[in-house]
Length: 335
Image 1: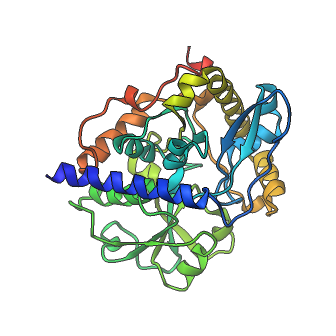
Image 2: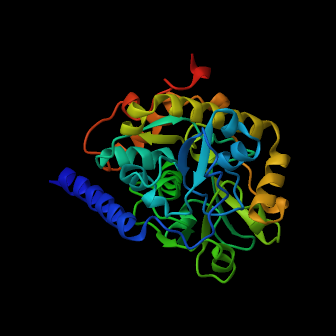
């Protein structure tokens, strides 16, 4: 019965997302990124925009450096959508490709989405963690025990935002961490105000929120590397199985362009910030850069760790094998 309730919850979320996409057209209140629509002879791939210009984004870099064009791809950026709708957008065909953390890919497949990850994304390192949880400099919160009863602000509840602090508590001796603190959804752009005004006690950011921290009075409480080391920060790109079957060559070319962009981004973090700053109209010094998996190759342990974690928290109705979630078939670097 419990497994059925879990599966029913996932199905309801997926259905609500699909309906939202149908009626709202997957629209965004934010300005969409640049598009090369109209260039003849290129295969169109519809890609969601990133929710904030303060974070580096591989498709923007691949577009700016001409990697997409060299691979015969015309990237059409469709606007910003909520994290919980990325899988639904790919299933509905509103977008051709999606991303975000691997746990959301697994959850989508669990709910019945026919998708598969084809190229790796971010990879955690101490210099460039995937998730960072910050507090005010004078906050009394210093240990996992101190987090009990507090409010943790995140842009989107669920996924790595949710399970990283759960595991931090569990690995520090606090059993059954769910319910030990409260999550608060914080609209993008209001995170710093919420933290400094005391509306939340902790803020969980993707990467290192250099913009917020540059103004001082903030310290890092913990990050995902403190919890798992470098293995758990994968944010792969996935297509629907239908798209993969119908356009395998386009998938292969997309994978190559993204992998090239990631390698360039790892080698040129300052230039990445400059490009993102120019494209998003923000100060490059405020852009958070990330570290990416080598040559875009998806590592099995980066998938297995989240299968195990989601199963342990009762979020999966059956065991999944990593090969059900991802493939390196289209990445020539994996051969």
